[in-house]
Each structure stands twice: as structure tokens, then as C-alpha cells.
Image (cartoon, rainbow, N blue to C red; front, side, top):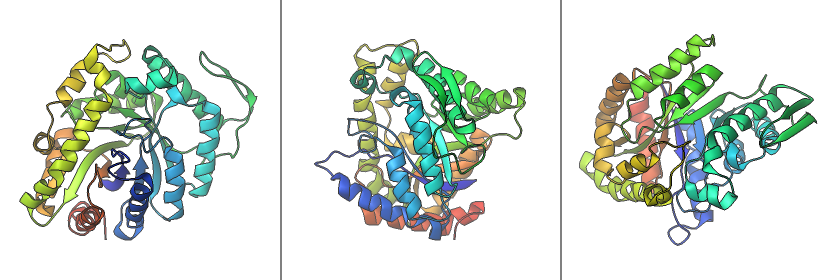
Length: 353
């Protein structure tokens, strides 16, 4: 298993200005190569303080690529529902070149109703827009002189530039939460998968659906599974929870607030049961996240035990992507945590300094 870092800004301007947030985030990126973290990942969200500092993952990853030589850059994830595939393909090709072929591209459907409303896109088109957009980007990266007349975007005899540095294109990930059809789709298409196991979903079963669909479709290998976890490592376990609790609780609160339309009667056939998912998220706390293995918070020994437990529960996965500066966690705390995790946890799993 490999470990990388993920950025999910969930701070408002009055809590931390954007220039300070990104200055601190890029300083943490500087630690990746020396400490052995294998990737840098960032989300795409808009407008709300839950993720809104990152409307363009590619902009941040271009800066991160300039500060690293080994770590891979991962969009976690771009949203085809709100992006033109011609522009996405061109920017992906550009970042693949800037990073010297160190880019992986994650795609997601989006799930925040306020984003659909503000972009003027119907959530009921989410699945169709996602699948059409992903396929059109794939074709534009792999092929030249592409013609693809879709429901939402029409492409005629177009070759995007720059052409990808990686051949035939950067690896793709599909983001999924807990819907079996999403895992099946990723496997059937032969893409990797990235998941957020915050609700303690039956990840072993879902990963099994993904692996089985991939094999049934005839794709080589098992594919790669990336799971996202909040992480805070400290020499004192009680102190670790004491420091992390207000930050993670605030993160969970921001998630529910950003998705609150699902609790106010919003519904969509493309998002069955999301009212129940967000209602369940209202009950989540730092303590429940630790108990479920979704948050790795504690001493190095406690975190090692938690990771081993979670590996057993899921049947194993290839990548852990770690949120290391969640909400308004102080920079020096995040830095110390990253260093301790790299020095005392990662070597247990064959990685790190």
C-alpha cells in the first residue's frame, strides 16, 4: 500500500485567507518527496466553504508539480458535469506535460445540489453528463481528429493539444461513495477507483464488485483502489484526538451544510437515498470516524493497528490518500503529523523514509 496526501479546503475567508491556505498547503507538498509520500491530490468544488477554495484542481497541481520530482499529481476529482470536455482534455494534456508524465485523473459526478443549481445543470442529468464527459475526454486524449456528437457536447474533427505525455493517456480514476453501480461501472470501463469510506460502507463488498466487474470485462490486473482518510499522528493518543476533534467535527459539519439541500426535500433519481446519506452524516463525529476506520488519528502504534484492521475489513487496497490539514488545523501540527507518520507508520507498510 502507498500513502499520499490530499487537500480538501473547508475554510471560509474569515477563518483563513486563500493565500495563506495555499501557502501552507504547498509547504506540505514540499515534504512529499523527502518523506516518501507518493501522490498529491486535490478536489474540485465551488462556491461554498466546503471545498470552494479549489474550483480548479489542475491549477493547484501545476504548482505542486513544480515543487516535486517523484510524487504523482491526482485530480480528486474533476467534474464533467460542469466542464467542457474539450477544455478538460487540453488542460489534462498540459498538466501531464508540466509534471513530466506524473498525472492521474480522477473524475466524479458531483453531489452538492447548490453547485448544480448555480451552474444551471440538472442533477437528473448527472449520470449521463458524467459518463458522456468522461468518454469524450478519454477519446480526445487517446485519439486525433475526434468526432463525438453527444447529448451535451458536440465534438467534430478535433485534436486537442498538448497531446498526453503518458501513452496513450494518464490513468483514470472514478470517484464513488457507496453506490454499487458506480463501482461496477469503473470496473467494467477498466478505470481505477477512488472512494471516501466516511459512513463505514461495506467497502469489502463494494471493492469486490469493482474487481469482479473489471475481470469480467477482460481488463488486465486488479485495478487500483484509493481510499481517503483523515490522518493526524501524535506521540500522545489522547492529545491527538483532543487536537483533531474540533477540526474534524467542523469538517463534518461543513460537509452536511454544503449538502443540506438533500435534507430540505431535494431528490433526484440519479442520487437515490442521498437524503438518508446526508442525514447519517449529521450523526458522524470524530469518535465515530475513528471507530469506523475512516479517520486515522492517534499515536503511530494506534494508527498502524487501525490501518491493519481496515485492510482486513476491505480485503486490501493499493493507495491511502490522507487529509493532513483538514479544516483549520495549524500548519505546524499538520507538518509534525506528516513527519511522524512517514517516519514511524509508513515503514511498517514498506514505504517512507
